[in-house]
Length: 265
Image (cartoon, rainbow, N blue to C red):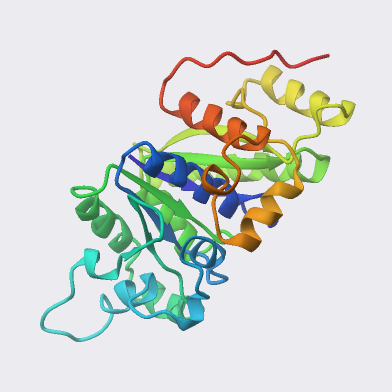
């Protein structure tokens, strides 16, 4: 399964959600790949412990060869790096993505990522794609390459208005480029369970018929500690409540039965 985590708004937890879901997948014995399409390289640094600017054989190198004049292109698996965690692999980001974007657009290479990930799907059980906070060539490529889309959502009114725009953009892309793409769900992230506004916003989105997932991810300093230690929560704090929420989210996405508390009024 190829999943993209996407939101045009920054600071909503895309990288954290991508990496922690992928880490749980890998811990369950599935060969799992994270593809980091954000030039900032947060997922890359989180899982590999090395800044994207210091790495070779990146996703930028994979895409660059599609616009270069080469007799033989390297295989997609040659751009995959093993992480310190069993079964978890990364196709790292690079700052070069910013400089490469115009070349790729000019050469109409928007389907090349899908081709590469389909090939990698033969050797990986799950692929998670992290994206930049923008609707650009790379996020469109990711949405075209993916089968499922997860949308992180911060519980405030600005995020709510942005959410409608995101869903419209995805709908257009589904019609024109990827009719098989499914919006798997909206993830309420950094959710404050005791505050009335987040509960109200989530309840209203559900009443509007939007696919809000039943697991709410709490706001916790433990996530920042996880970033600093370069360890996904399942490895750094396996018994923490936020880790349990990520595990519940993973189960929901994979069709497993999960007992959850109803959203309070």
